Length: 338
Ligand code: 5GP
Ligand code: MN
Image (cartoon, rainbow, N blue to C red; front, side, top):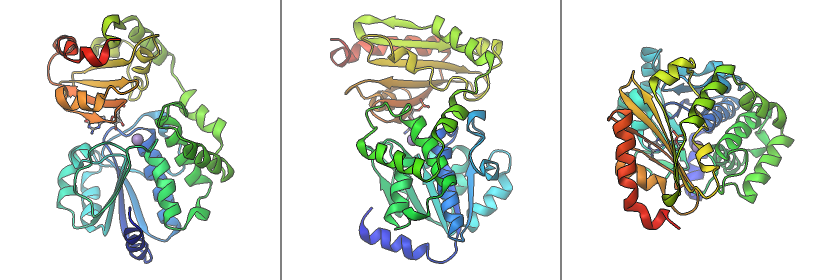
């Protein structure tokens, strides 16, 4: 974002505005953390702000300060549509293509508001007047910290803002271990703790809140883990029947794909999760090093994301999806084999 754009935004934000803040569909810790942090910041500056999430999110995110203020588009469509059409400004956070807002995409496209995008995914679409896009950033939460700082307001970061930002940085960096975690990330995290984020409590709220059934489902996923050593690839499947057996709740499979990547020598991991209700297979892809799962997902599974973490979907059956995956892999032999 240029200095000129920052000063334009400062002018825009100098008088109270109606502002909508939107995370992507199936929001994760970074999406909820960044939107709520920005919400708290805008309220401090007397704006009429509202976070509208396309749909529900896991229970382990439902403790963040003022989380219950979030409007859910799928269950409050009329109220949300009015707010969207009356908005002066719309911030889209942690995504960069409007379709990723799910059913909200139609009213977002019709809105008259000025768009601001803050995001760290690759290949941003061109819908926002103000774009703060940086694929080298650990998380959108790190960018929201920088954004508030660029506006000259870092001294306004209070414990609520700090708590939301800490939660998002922690979840998107795999607890500060992914390569996108920089020295700057650690400086920001340190300042968030100074400003009142309780790091141990945040970790506990997100990671130590498992149900017994979630751990049993993890056990099932690990039993299903398959390895293709010559292509340094591992993958996991979970059928709808298996999900039902362990009373699957939203968020229960979050992070499971990473177990494949924790195997010695493996650089590419996938998880295929059957969703009979939507009649799709949801795919998560992770890699280490230069192998781009963003490119892989864009080319074969209608998705995208980052170089080392991407999502996608398939309309084939679970079995056919896995067969398609296995049949494509040899095309990447050069990148995947030693
Ligand atoms: P996950 O596997 O956790 O669903 O997604 C991994 C990463 O890829 C996340 O940062 C997520 O936002 C992003 N992602 C997931 N699905 C898509 C998609 O369809 N398109 C794009 N561009 N990014 C995605
Ligand atoms: Mn993110």
